[in-house]
Every structure is written in C-alpha cells, then in structure tokens.
Image (cartoon, rainbow, N blue to C red; front, side, top):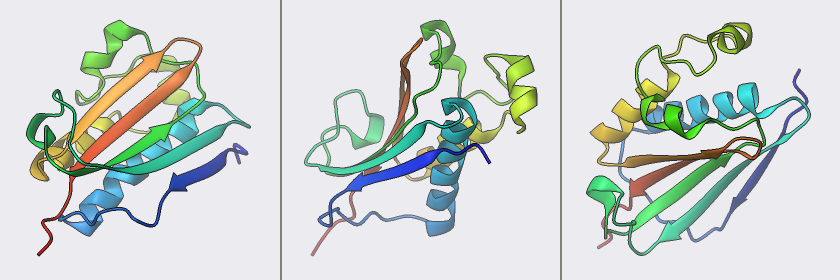
Length: 145
C-alpha cells in the first residue's frame, strides 16, 4: 500500500544467535514496520546483517563480544537528536498527530528494548533530520563448540 521497497543485505556467513525466535522475530517486525510507516511512501527500507568480531564499546552486554549486527535503515524525515533518548519509552511519540495517522500504540520500540535486554542485546538509534534513521540491533553470537 505504501509502495516501499525492502532491500536485504547480508552474507551467508552470519553467526547464529541464541534466543527466543518468536521474540527476536517481534523485534524485527516492530523495527521494519516503523521504517515502513515513517520512512516515506515509495522509498526503500534496507535491512543489513553483518557479523562483528566484537561489539562496540557502547553496546552494553555485547561490548567486546562477537555479535550479529542487524540494521534497519529508512529514508524518512529523520528524528531530532533531542528525541532519540526517549524513543524507547512506552507511549512516547515524536509527532503525536503523524503517529496517530500512521497507526500503532507507541509501544513498539519499548517492546524492542525490553526483548533485547532479556537477550543481553543492545539497540542503538541514529538519525538526522532530512536523512532518515538507522536502528541497529547488536545480538550476542551463540557460543560455538
């Protein structure tokens, strides 16, 4: 309906992650759904998956550990920096009128944050007005034998 193109970029050599498949599915559904809603009609949403030998220093429990990085990138209006720290709060909305028009409850990113905490994973959000948003999920790689 919004004529959004989904583009998947990721190699076949991605590490397995340990976790609840349904909950991790919900994380991706929520992030991709938001990217479609707020990324703009006729635009592209990119889903990128990459193996990292070590999570970045600011990635909480994943810092310094092997992990899978999944990014959901949209081409929307972007989000002002002052809103970024509050995006994962329950019911927080940057633009209440636009959010009401797009639908949803204002719980999607709060759910993402709580699921990722349970999985010792990390969410990073980067956005710039006029340039879109990137939601990065760092999932700890499963230990291999």
